[in-house]
Length: 230
Image 1 (cartoon, rainbow, N blue to C red):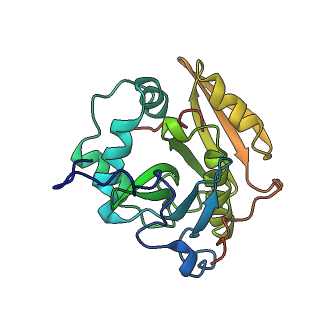
Image 2: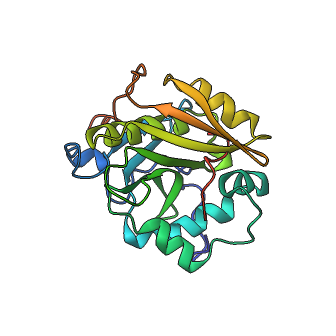
Image 3: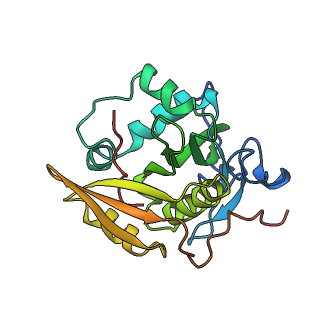
């Protein structure tokens, strides 16, 4: 991201080492039903990232995440090629109510700007009594393989369970083998629920306990695809 003055590289920190702009570690985790949980998560390489609910002003940050995704990751996330995430799409994805549709963002500061590294989300279908929600996840390629995707899934599950949601439905491109392995290794009961042209839909049972499924802890002080490798 360009700055008005040339940065002092001798003093710059590695991206992700700064606390988020609104440090979730200083905020209490809300009870179920009041919104997705906030907190701080430590990646396998020691990088700390903040977890917080998506906000309506995150639309430009979601567009930034999309631009940083590899072509393949974007294809797997949206089950088709997209040149960009339009203003309308980004606004819709950022405008969730936290109940019928919810999303959790993993964030960090880079060059003084808050950046979204990954997002997990669900959306219930229209109509009363729905208890199975569509699920999707995206993690910036450079942060994949660090445990971030699994932490985002578990935080979202914790929130959904508090609202009585029983299962997530994840539609995955049949070529997205890494995402299939991610679901199988999530610790939740997963079964094949449907097949489509080039896609498989898996049902993730939220009633089945997954080890370490607590939301991220504060350290010290348009049918979406399920996503790409997390």
